[in-house]
Image (tube, rainbow, N blue to C red; front, side, top):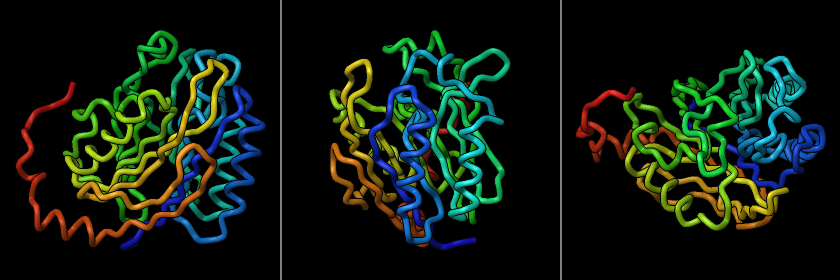
Length: 259
């Protein structure tokens, strides 16, 4: 169990539908991290960009990217998380994986597929929220469009950290900034968001705005916009405990079930 958690946020451009090149790019970024970190966070669909052509990039849970993630996690003695296209039982998933240093893999399938881009017609939606237990911390991994739906992230599990990975376009950046902060405040949880930069093959622009917010909604990072950046932010368990004891907002949540 650790009282602190060092999280490395990797805000980068992505090469369109080229998993091998993207893995090499991330390897360079990760190898350059000299400090000891506990979790490395990559963007949504980090091997391909936000593609609606999954057949050209889809992998299995025994594929090259999962193998690379396991090797990298073991080498850095750090967990790694991000989403990629996975094919399973003839279905495609926008799957966020959480790879532990010991090689254990947990995963979450994006619940809210992005109807505006037709993601719902191509990818199978997940139906289960997971909580990852890691070094004494409870972590809730979610993907991009999930950010718009607060009921799904509602902190009835007493998690400590929300992690969103995204391909959130510049044109709707105000929503990203606002909702990341809101999710931290309403759930009294650290909220981490990692978004890509650059322009994809569909001419959609991304400007990053990756960020970390504390349980009161104060921003903790200094990641610049629109450029590649790697920043390490330290989370503190005592900060969560102190503020939840002082402001018992979670105890006043409405009680209901999610179907």
